[in-house]
Length: 216
Image (cartoon, rainbow, N blue to C red; front, side, top):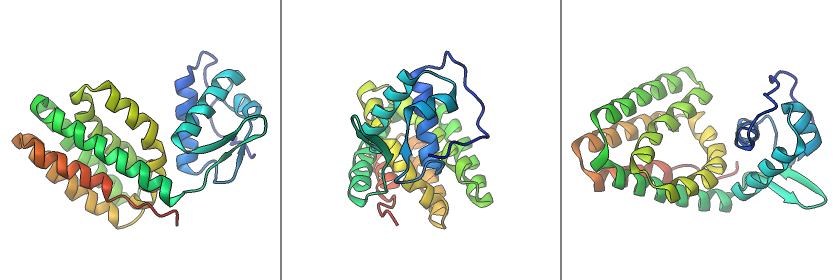
């Protein structure tokens, strides 16, 4: 497994969640490719942590479908599987639909403005072809209603299934399809600001349900 040489060593007090996020990002961004074997000792050396948080992170990645863990043998990065992507997409779309429906009555003017600002950053990133910035802005936008919904079970489900979908989103935001998301975001924000929970929830669902589920 080739270990990147340009990543900064993390603080040894790094929490397991930070290790998980670093590995998750590396898989989504393509630093670790499908079929590549992940060795906990090498990853621990790369991140400057012990093997324990690495092993815990790999187990979480397996639950998210990003790696296939074979106890006592190896852990490999999974390929983009159409069925798994479709299942994750359906769950994530349903959770965002629920989040928006619950959040709309609670959204403040500042929340709506935060969504508008995030969509502006998203639009600029799409225009610049900056997929990483587009994904960050997309996260920031949808995080607003998720936070306003204040539903811990919903957040737990999204945490589990969103990472797998992120790999498909990179394909989408690298294409002309990314521009269509700007319009969907605008409509979602408009409906949220108008207090139309049902229609806003439907747009949120469609936004995620339209994600590609092909591994090509």
